[in-house]
Image (cartoon, rainbow, N blue to C red; front, top):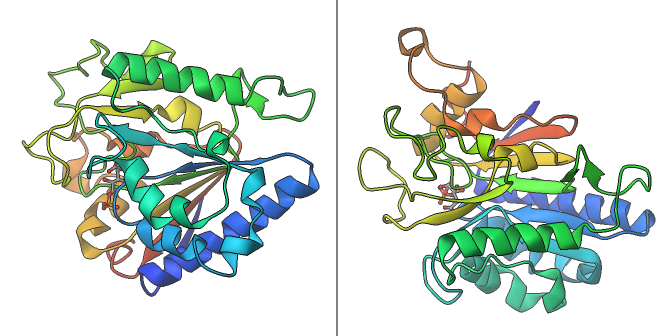
Length: 272
Ligand code: 6PG
């Protein structure tokens, strides 16, 4: 795991843009597309806007980039809560990327149908690749080149929120990893103890098992409000906090890929 601290969100965005451009170049040299999973929320908007401008708009061959989403709210693509809409407005409308390369989660469908269809789309996108052909399948799961993640102040990531210990996930699964599926529908952040801005909308999310198979996982986290969650995930629970449940973001542990925390000064301010 690596931690890089930058002055502010714009500097964080620049760092990530450079990594994406380099990985796109690497994939192109291997004659294959770059597969990247984008995060929702507000933090990555600065990155998406940067990628939509020179030198990245023209410098990256978007024909050879496949964009996926780590999670989505169960709303239509034009809904203001939609992560797809946020990425469309901040990036997709300004780059030359074929529609077939953008793998939208169909949040307008019933949650379980949306999750199943998205999982099928991911499988179809990685069809024909396997470990022998040096493709993107490892242990039976797709290997995304890059996964971008955000972090909530409650320690959530993707749409995996801290569960009330006595209330297993509505899917009837104490831990959604047990289902064996790599895309599920989950409760929204709720309006109880969680600080996440979104109202109580159901979500579709990739699961840690899939994300942990990726080649490069990047947490982009900015702002003082996240400092507590950052240190809880990176440094572990504080002395008096040992029996509190593990934050969902702590379940992001790459199997063989790289994990990079890209933080601004404020989000890093409580790290040991
Ligand atoms: C979402 C995201 C979510 C987000 C965090 C941080 O759908 O909202 O996937 O996990 O990354 O809540 O959000 P901010 O960047 O807005 O703080």
